[in-house]
Image 1: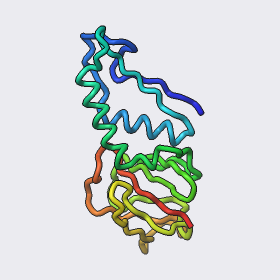
Image 2: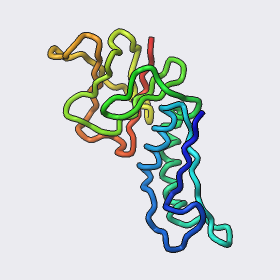
Image 3: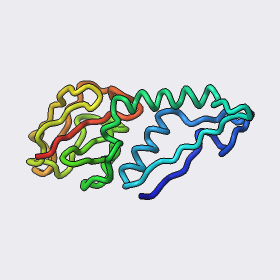
Image 4: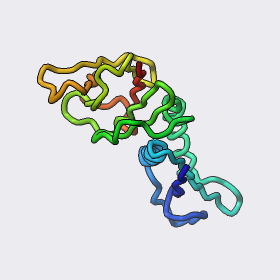
Length: 167
């Protein structure tokens, strides 16, 4: 595995003047990117001289932890997936589960290139709700499937994860 070492702000140790912290979405996305490349993320948090973690760091870690409680199955024990990186995000996988990390929402359904005939079911990882899959009449080829997400807005702006169970 290849680690990526990053800090929550611009310093490896505590720096009272450095308040330029990464957003929780950036930390989640860095984690997903690492896992999707068979790597892992080492995240440095610098305590102050008394050993206290700055409040800004605590809040970021709480938000990342909240996302992990809902979507951790797409990270823990996962690695790179067979399909190439899609334009809308990243893939991770574990066994027969392919996890689509949808980071950007384009217009219309989300294209799953090359997955026609390979998918048993698709659900939102966060709550298990089913996602409708289809192949529209005007699809460019017969190898792709499309996720019909329930609204124009992604349910989680940090990273919406679809659990694709493969046949």
